[in-house]
Length: 250
Image (tube, rainbow, N blue to C red; front, side, top):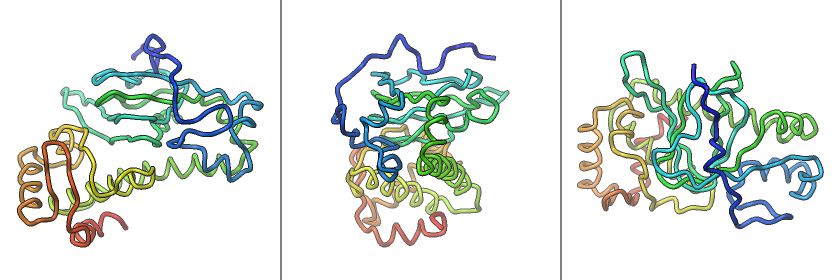
């Protein structure tokens, strides 16, 4: 079992952001829950709710590995994190992708160890939250506790989306529309964004062959549903994409 410390401290440093001592960062994963309880950032400091800024972690650097002792969760501040497992035959299985404002590590709560690996796909900055400390805070802030439950159920729901007998077109449309909605929720463009993950990772996540992913994207572009420029994708005929994705979004 791995003994590597999670969230490697040698790569950690305090960095500037768009928040300050009194204001949350714009991508803070917990600000809405805390503000709904009437708590501002200064109040959290009084409660010793310490947040450690970690990064930059460069592409290929692991945030944690399967088997590491669970001690913290982390919110992505910038960049993209991929979670995955490796089976006994050495095959990788992509579990998900996480973007600014989203939380990784919640699946380590049960068992006290991380059950999967988390790796940076590009330059990543994180906010690391000690789970024992955030658990104490959650007992004082019911809104924060409910937010943690929502984050857990959202991860479970995303995993369940891919369990159905969906076509390749439906899976790809669901993936693109899902990314669009998640990015829009954090103030990013819903119609034009970078696919920061490799096509092979997308194929693995969607349980499709890499050539199928390339073929579907090419067909979407020829039909005028999307415009592709290397890793940049622009969603064009959104109504048709939404209709294709609708069964997976229920």
